Image (tube, rainbow, N blue to C red; front, side):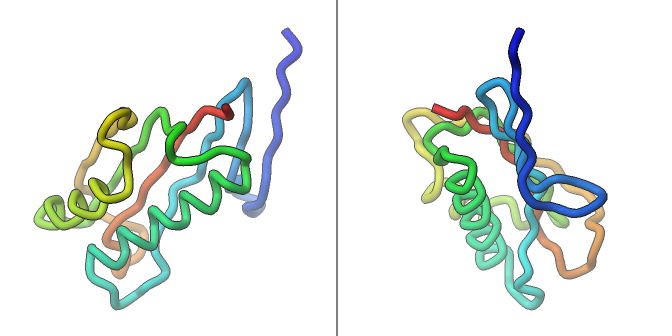
Length: 118
């Protein structure tokens, strides 16, 4: 098998984008809008995912799977309103959404995405 692996961006700890065997794997994305509510932070995170997918040569239409972590499940409905406007309702990706303690207190959402490179 002649597989290629491309890594883009990041730091010494992680790559922002890893492309392997026709899949784009993104590192978890958080919002830098420190005083933003869940709606603003969700939009920011999904826009970041759009930009990274574009950098990798694909789009959200090719999403395979998205993992979403919320600081508070009380934000679930508001995050879903942003999600529903962002993702295809015809061919949505698989998804999981759970509540976790975030690395920084101002993070309300983090999302990780995997997409195909079509």
